[in-house]
Length: 122
Image (cartoon, rainbow, N blue to C red; front, top):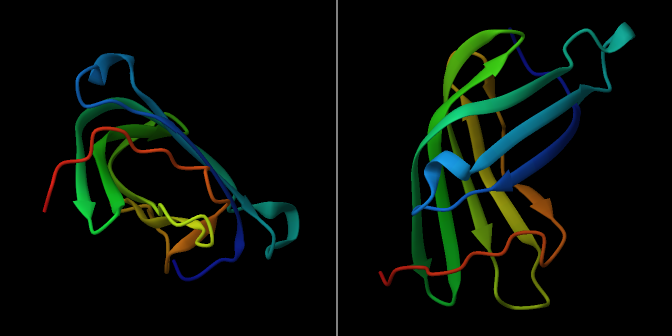
């Protein structure tokens, strides 16, 4: 449809060893269009993969699965980066809801907002 500016709110509690107990959601609030007509909430209903990979001192966590927007199911992939240095912000590297939403560019989040445990080596 095109680019729409807005606010994003991410909530994730994911674990590779307990996929069934993991949760992930994304709320997009349209701040550009009259009536915020492009706002939506995405809630994962199946998390099929959580992969943590160490990159230097940092950790990148890739989460895949499916979720719902207004009762319609879409596959998704979200990539989060836990930056270890306290001077660096954490990053939501990308969030793609296939055929529905594609976050353009990395989104910084507060340092400590992403905590990755058990990252694998390179």
